[in-house]
Length: 351
Ligand SMILES: *Cc1c(COP(=O)(O)O)cnc(C)c1O
Image 1 (cartoon, rainbow, N blue to C red):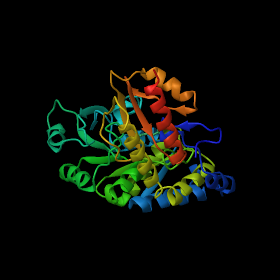
Image 2: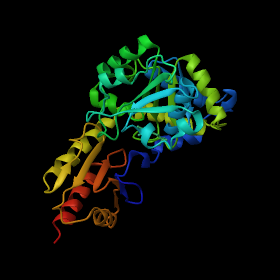
Image 3: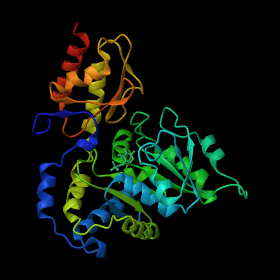
Image 4: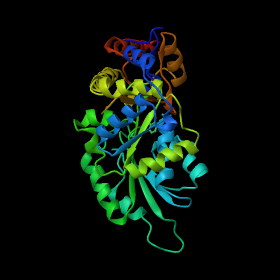
């Protein structure tokens, strides 16, 4: 089921429109002033989110970027160090906000192809007490790890990281923008994937189709601090329940169906595998993303592939030189996958 205008959009799961049930819930949502804590819809959404993650409290934010920023600002003071993967969203795509706005110093560890950070690298990254060193306050893990192929990190891995950090009083934040994709891919409850983390962020506005918003979860004390930082950043919203209503539908109706997106990503990859000259740069899909690269001997340039696809209302974009990330979501059905494969074959084989 492409969008109403017939467009099939593989560029990201951020392009998803709200579902009809969401639009109805938004129209009917009871609201109040959320800065006063009086929006019943937001209060329900935050409580449901905290319950799902088995954390004490939740906080609705305007975006995932804002939730990650708030988390880092709540965990770290100016000059403190946050350690993260070199392929992580916070390092690559958040405009350096933690440094610009929080004065937080970044240390990078290479992400391994499976999305993890090596445990030895984590141990080595922790600074000893020394007059020359910043304080290592925080580590960030991303689950699923987007840039490594949309790969899920296991419960065991996350817990082994926490086991290194906990005794030293260093916090662990999970950038779980797509934590529900990880949960569905692994067949594990989302709460189990964050059980030893101090905080977790997840997006309502990606595969779950809500139009706006992310959630930050953690202890009561942490969220109290986070709520004040959100206000400081100008992110205190008023009748936000209009947006939150879609988030409630996202959590109630849109998580289990992610399985379908994962199956379609697999089918997409299987279909592409039949064609010559296309490389699976980051392996076969484990969630809702397929990463491909055109080899030198494919008879079409990446730019012309984008144009040729757009002529039939199929949108793709480059994730690197000659590389594409194809993302499946609610607004792409089996027929749309077939249309893509048919068009790809035509464009590649055309003399
Ligand atoms: C999308 C994304 C974010 C940020 O979310 P926005 O709502 O787009 O700001 C953070 N982390 C990861 C891994 C993401 O994929």
